[in-house]
Length: 425
Image (cartoon, rainbow, N blue to C red; front, side, top):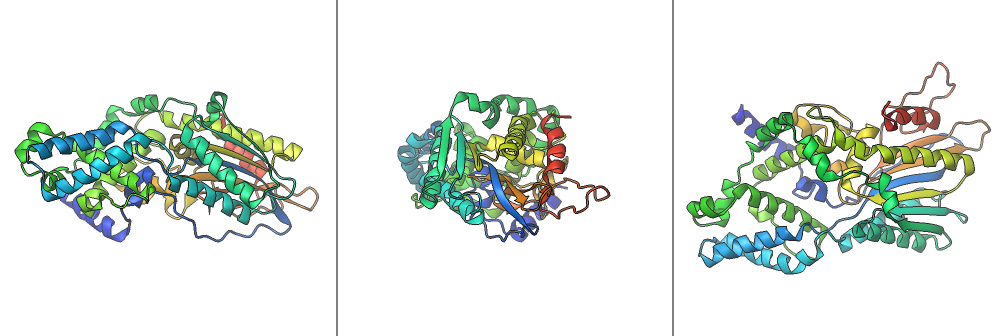
């Protein structure tokens, strides 16, 4: 069975054509979308947009990880235990300890640019929403990187449309829906015996020894002084974060084989699923981190439809909400199914991929449309990372004269379906 998995892993690494950036998991730098949107039904124009976005690319955190990597390698070097590759890694670790560690968790300049790009495309794609009298409400998590992401986004909106009226704020009271739960507690509640068993299976295919032998001269030294699994994971995480800082002119790609990297990403992808996905291994507490956000989206939209303002509601938060929000929406795009429930972790990557769901600057947008024709229903479509999504929202064609085709849905049907999910009915 293990030989079969290794073979499948090698085939997957070649056939999926995933580069190391994609398999950087939630560190994957936001890809600029290249997609054409489905034309709205005749007579319909967008009038309101509701958004939640993750902060842009950031430096890895905590700073202790950079210190650990550098100190571990420096100690080995002082004992003459580093190979030439190990010495090269030490030089890179020293630079990161000095440059990146003091910025741990902070937004990078690429993170700023990501939000500026999303804002620019939002105005281009939906010019009707950002007209002369448009009013924008923007809210951010109390995290500095989220506040700076919001500032970058609004700066670009103003550059595109100087006449916009914008209200912006960040505050603890907003966290009730922007990021309500303790993520550490979610992790603890998800770490059940059932998940541990699945996790062990995945990590049985993750072997740090090849990398350790490439970095250190003596396996006995490694066995005595190095927690190989921990060092392996820190190299994976820190290395993944480097794509968010293009001013850093090196990577860690030379430390990996495709097979090792793919195996480690499979484990990482499954971990995110176990904590924030629709998994069968625990009580799915991670989904509760997004239910208040879904309720906020629905309630604010009801008010806007009734009163006509604002033109856009923007929210800036975290991956720990983007993941479960995508799961609650049960979006489909090609083979990706964000709401899928499966216990098959070795094949999870075929239908649920963390880097597609939640790269840096990941975002979900609800775009609302209305018709000039009297008594026409309000329509809504969902974009995830600026790509149209298929939703499990049904329209009863026996009672509704003209049911719209995906990606457009009647607001009444949409509101009823997701209202039950928001209220956990």
